[in-house]
Image 1 (tube, rainbow, N blue to C red):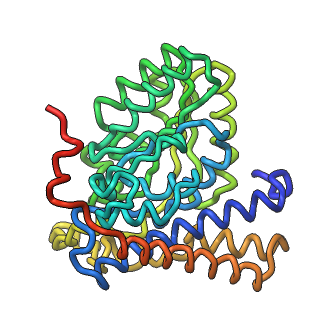
Image 2: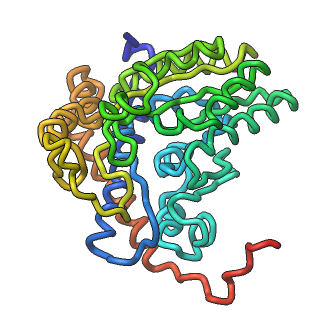
Length: 343
């Protein structure tokens, strides 16, 4: 069990601050679909429930290390320092966005902050991360790559091929498998009977003779401890590791997707606006990483209730400002549509 005192008060406050900022950003995105219908086109995939996993992992990062998630990608750039204004404007498809409004939620990029970009393809980050890690290895930059992907991506051929070559070449990459219990609308208990190969998923690391570990992804300090070991191994030139971080996704798979009817063969899975059953969702909310870590900071006298409320109010104001900035930013002109298209 990691010791809070080992990280120091300032670092613990930083972790909670980043977790809160992620949650507030995602809440604004969800609210947009109710308050501003049609303002965001296409899918947005949220990370509420994953805050401890993302922040705990990236708390081990050095300034020039890469972070490469898949299309569920709002949390990582926020932690890396990307301005929420530019992120939100991109989600709204506005000219002041990260990609001038042409990328949207699933295609964020901020290369200046070592966030090369994402893609809508399941598992794309895995192969891309190996490429970035190979470049760092060849150039001897000392950088490592933090690669985030879902449990569904661990069934893709790119997963097996990439982990194999990363292990053979001892590439400096940490593979972080985010097991959020659902693949779109299929619960992992149903996957086990059909397509999911084993529990824990971290045991897949054994096939490539690399370390594998499974960690409670609702606890940022447990994630920090596991990823720290993997990062040290990568920096030492010993190659990759596979960390399975387990948590519950508190929102639907994507905001632009309507929750389908519940299959009659699984009547215990009652639709409640997200998916799953009511008891399952309540249990997950009881283990919400934000409230759990908040209570921990209070108990350990890291922050007072007043300071916590001030921090949370600051995150709300920051994300309210991001929405107002996005709404005031102009749309690209129609004639700009082919500016970034190459034959």
